[in-house]
Amino acid sequence: MKPEKLFTLEEANAALPRLSILMERLQRAALSLHEELRSLAAESATDLAELSTEELLRQRPAARSLAEELESVVDEIQATGVVLKDIQLGLIDFPAEREGEVVYLCWQFGEPEVAFWHRMEDGFAGRQALPGSAGPRYLQ
Image 1: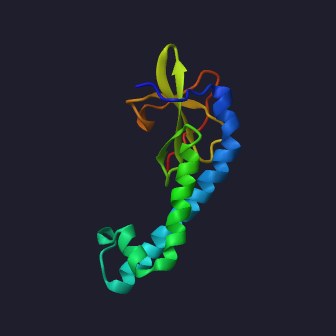
Image 2: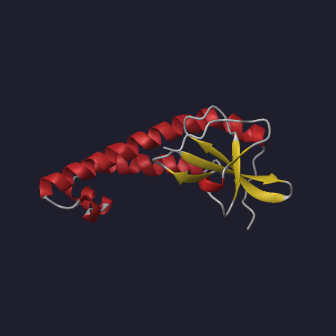
Image 3: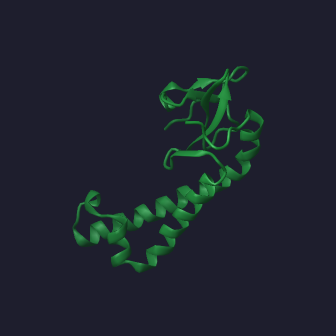
């Protein structure tokens, strides 16, 4: 299935300043929400893995603004036509065409430019440097 939007490398790199700001907001909101969950787990002597966001919002209605911020930023990122792969690692894929095949241009938050690509089925592990690029691999 062909994505709605295909990016050129230039378009992907031009989107990075905005996506960097959004990813930073997203990671902050996700971290804050996780801290709320961890705090509730400690207070209620419940295993963190057993708590859902819904339970958190039931017990701490003030946390709703964090959940709404998270959802809003995810929507804003996805509205650009990119694929948000991992919030914590800051991974975003840009659907693109390379030698007649639909692939992903791959970017990780913190990288100065889009310097990698991978086939759609390969994921981050199959990431390869774009020609003329020898950028670092930031996966942490």
